[in-house]
Image (cartoon, rainbow, N blue to C red; front, top):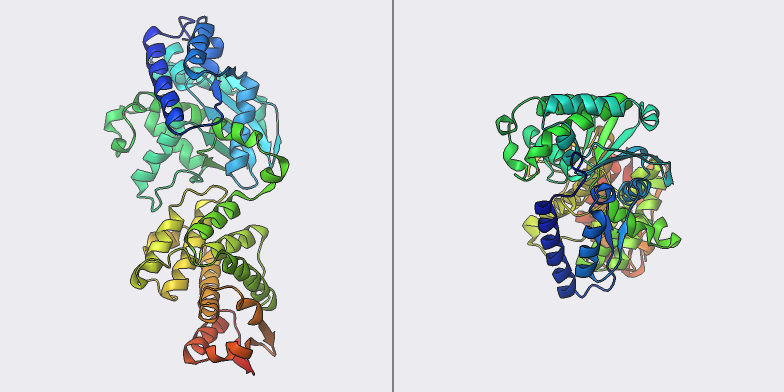
Length: 451
């Protein structure tokens, strides 16, 4: 399209066939509201209007042709919807263009569009990677928004960059098969992109994990990412699977819905679907809130929301065989389709659930999962798992008990008080678990029964 000014006939035919298929799927799914978007290639092509007319005839709804600024805005909103409290630069690499936009929380700057999409760059460079490298470096050097990137995060959106991340994960034997939130230092990803763009694709180690349709553009995507990262001097790069489509959906939400935490919302849904009592999950949050307070365990806002999510997910493995509840819970949480959480956060939540079921033993768990969390989060996962082991002996996963079984600290002793009918729960097993919890937070323990 860049050299001819037109969408090729073969590409149009393939695109329309795909659109017919998706329209048929929408009918099967009884979709009530259909949004059809077009981006850079259609925007710039001489025959773009003909293509739009053909799309509208198939879909039965008007097609929305996004401007470069719209595309950048929706890509940024997609990152807002899927990354907790983002701060950095969003880059969305498509086939026809690259959109760049500064973002901090929900504050989005003006977007910049560059003709550096994989297909466009392949076309303008005459399929010469060396020439493409010079084109990318020249265009990127003129972008003001990248001058604000030093020491911040670059959020990479787009299928080609996801393929690069997938390749990197395969080469290093990464323990999570989860793309969203995968993070690398700026230097590491720039060096990796340098290697990918300068060797024949079929000779790259583990290239089999990249779809064949993506491989021809891999070098072009790599050299663009390298140019952007080096120009911006970002501290790290984070992969986002949420982009323009999710940004559009996010823009349709009301303010109250936008304000909800996507991780906590997802955890509540899974709690509702798989736990014995969703209300117990909420009570466990309040009970551990109190425990963190009386034990004088400081935690950041991010650590607090992770703990709350862990409480909501603590009982999702109860239907599994008792011997496998810890392992199954860990695998479900670590690989769940969550957004709003990074990989160390995933690992923390998964580990807390594992410890809740298996005790504070690591022998049955992959050591690679533990490597994803730092020393502090690993310690907090063990403490939370130990607290859950106390809580579930008291409550049997049913609501109503935990509010009547408060934890307190008296004279450096961690005291669990059981009153009334809860007194019958006292015993050696509960005392042992309370003792373990106390030891983890540097306290003696006491199980107190009040008739």
